Length: 186
Image (tube, rainbow, N blue to C red; front, side, top):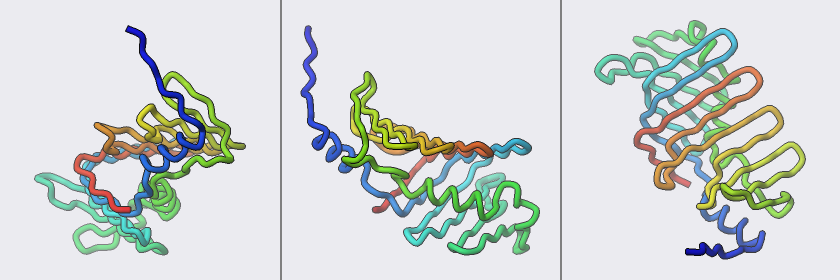
């Protein structure tokens, strides 16, 4: 049997990409978090709640799902609390304002949305868009699966078209979030 594929124009592909990747500003989910830099690694189960105002609360869960520590970023300041005590300094290698601000950028999904100014080519796996130091790979379902911008690489993983994983890498750090019950709002 011969497979036929309907060829779409670049404009139609861009419209499909835009519709398939609506902006997400609020995320609420349980998940597994992994962070790594040259000197440290951390992996923990937790919850994340990011508001449309770019405020983020990450709860690190301990035994029996109890909150072990809580990192709260209100848009300007980061505070890490454990047993009602401020332990921000102790956890600054994992939770500091630079890492949280990068996380917020990544959680404003999509990080980059291609437009008509991007060059496009069709690949076996979907569509590849490139402009200057930015490239975006889109799968055959028009979902953004990978973004590269300068030394930043972001990968989105899906299960039945629902975002289930976000991975961020740059020259100094990497973090990965596997979402187990995501709730998103535009």
